[in-house]
Image (cartoon, rainbow, N blue to C red; front, side, top):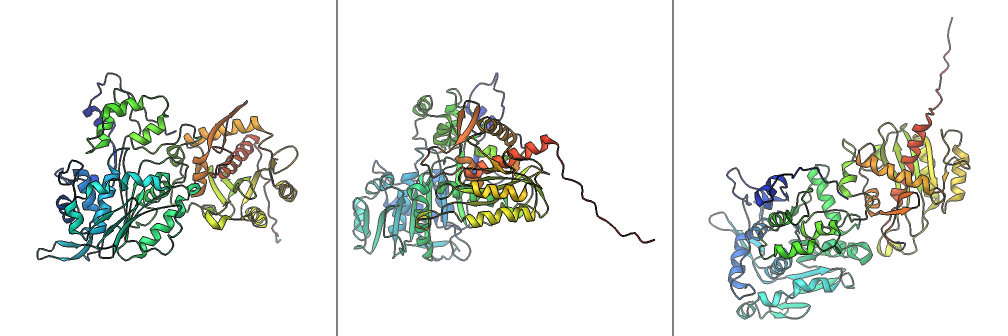
Amino acid sequence: MIPIPEIDLEGVEPSLEAAMELFPPTDIGPLWLKDEDGNWLLPERTLGWEVAGWCAEWLQMPDGSPWLFTNEQLRLVLWYFAVSEDGEFVYRQAVYQALKGAGKDPFAAVLCIVHLIGPCLFSHWDENGDPVAMDDQSAWVQIAAVAKGQTKNTMKLIPSLLPERTRRAFGGVDVQKEVVYAYGGTRFLEVISSASRTLEGNRPTFLICNETQHWISSQGGVDLYETATYNVLKTPTGRFFCITNAYEPGEDSVAQRIREEQEKVWAGTSEDSGWLYCSREAHPASPLTKEWAPFILELIRGDAVWLNIKNIVKSMADGTYGANRIRRMFYNQITAASDSLIGPSEWDGALAEGRLYGDKRDLSPGDEITLGFDGGKTDDATALVATRISDKTIIPLAVWQRPEGAAGDGWHINEAEVDSEVHLAFATYKVRAFYADVALWESYIANWSEAYREILLIKASPQSATGFDMRGNQQKIARGVEAFIQAVIDKRVKHNGHKLLRTHVLNAKRRRNRFGLTFAKENAESPRKVDGLAAALLSVMAMNDLIESGKQPARQYSRRLVQS
């Protein structure tokens, strides 16, 4: 779980002002920027004003009145349709992350109609130097989700947005259950899902990625994202827009992948690839109590005044919802599941300082290390992880995992490659201890033990210099897990930001044996691997045992010829 900072609330009367002072929300993206005078900062050049005017003229609200964006939605439109001085879109892809019920689906539906029949492309500059928009005569709009049922919230809104006069004016718009035609079928809007078999080769002009927090590999979400977004970006003016709730870390959803890549951009470790990312998230220490929740929710909902705060507070009090799920749904916070072994804030807080590669290049030849190994054959991953003794930094040397999709059919670990990586580690670094889980790899581990027993300072077990039976050492594993978690929280053990290791760590769920805390996958059939964590744990346990032993490598003396 995320660590909650200590804030003394004794004697503080809950109020909106107090909530804003003590628990200011985290605002991400230009949507929330203000100038020195306190006015909203808006793009210098945008087609958004023309889009908003067109929507007010041709679309309608549920009560039949002209469509009007809220102030927050309008700013989002202005930024999404911002153009450069060359008339190119500043952003080709965007994410709008907001709490449940904030109006993401109606907003997405309006964007779909705009890209189908409205002014969505740059045309020219007017006499005042302002950009002028035009419609897209080859419009091909898609609404995507891992299951078609998830597109219903967006698709069912389209008929009510289009009054009859608009349908007539724009080529006889024909609204059906899963497709909308315009201009005699020369333009259309369709629903696609991960089950769609005709995605390859499509050239859509605009794409809505709906509820990307649910787009996970096991449901085909990652493949859908890669295929659908590649298709739309092949079109010179093609763009896509993702709507999402706060995701659950460790699921490796598309929402998580996008956010983590953007965090690298914000940290200055990756180049900006042109994303517009907008989210308002509750302060990490925001209370879930009935006294404070109404004011926190008022801060987070922004212009979504249709949300009934009293009903949400009642839902939050329902004991069937876990606290972290409530934070994700209503506070728009990215938090770990309640049974997660380690939360994202805890793990990310232990990132080593300095510019890192996030792979084994963060180790230097000759570094003193301990090794941990956990191996699979087909379904489970295999990992070889080092911990540098000098600064207690975890650095994976290699993680092998079955590829997603068709590439993973019939996949089997290359045992010779794993064996070579182990020998390369001994040849490159000064390996002082090596704990390798014996399951499925007994013969290789026996060979490693025989080859390196003379240079390892401690033995993994009385029977082997490298073989460690995780199943047969439950008491030691329980102690090791508890020590590992605390060391990560206290930042006494750090890591180099290896992406796949992070996923494995956040996948791990808390379990207990008769000796204490341990971990496992969420279930035996889960595709969410934890083997990298197991290898990291073993490398840290090896390091701790080595330190406790007090053993040091024998000093090496060089002989010199002395001339008389």
